[in-house]
Length: 173
Image 1 (tube, rainbow, N blue to C red):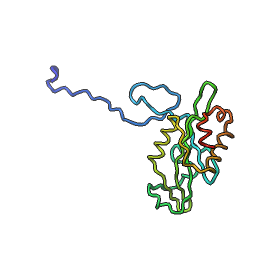
Image 2: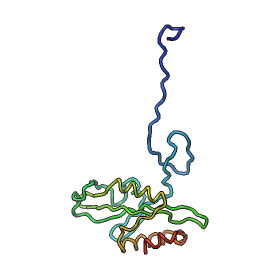
Image 3: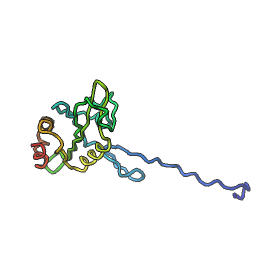
Image 4: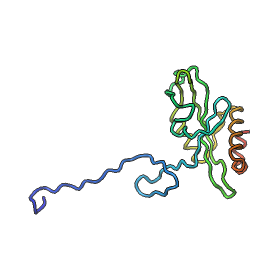
């Protein structure tokens, strides 16, 4: 009780901070929410029908092939789909310049006519995390898909390709 008013004192209300995933770029952040993920060095490459192209809309499931598609975790819901890949590609700057530091491929199936698709979201998240952690996981791509991805990386920036580790070049050989 407060002596002046003769009524119980109200406890101080603490402002609640919401827990959320912060995606930031080039910002140093300390305090609540620290440990954010910086995705500014990650790009999305789509491989569709033997053609590879950069489509950063895939970061939010809004790539050209994903727009308007209702995804299901059951592969049987997309019986007439075509295989497409998202390859999470991380770039880092080293002593000799920038290079392709991480690359992981995620499978998905798209049936454009039926507007249905299949993908495992957890697999996409885990492989994005692996690319951010500078790992290469490209063994699921077939020879044509690897060739298309390799061609895109070289055409996009040959210097980055030349600076990249041999393990990437071997994975795409």
